[in-house]
Length: 202
Image (cartoon, rainbow, N blue to C red):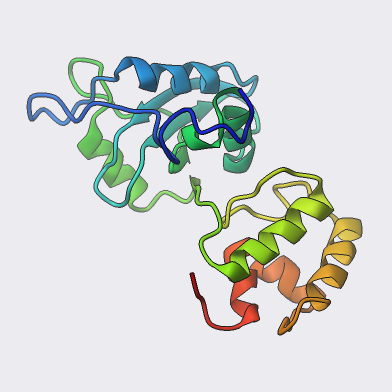
């Protein structure tokens, strides 16, 4: 399936069942297992579990235990390449282990508590405003990508001094842009750079 296909019903839409029996544990359904299987097939992933919304935003949360170097945007691209952009979980959290209940199932309450202060959490969203779409289109052109999320980090996507110079030239050619090389590395995401293009809109 192409990474532009919408086979899973919207971002993070691979499916999942709510916590079972009031225990706080989660029982995955068959759609969820497809995304889990794709994540586990990544060479730097040891374990992966997909949970439904934990109440802090829409979409599923993927809990990933890496055994190598892995970052959220790379894992999102891996899922999109196999199942389409719509299957990318809304949140991807990299953890040393997955909190589980007495029955061995993921403990949603413990996960929610862990993620409240956990730094290695990637949130996937496609561009939402015209400014974000303009910036994202430039990133795709310079980095040779078909899509980017608004919270993706320029460096994590493979940006370097050469591509930064190219991107800066493209950004400065945009009407209303006020961006420096320092901004590009400090702001680093589509969402934050798009704020330099004026008020947000739809």
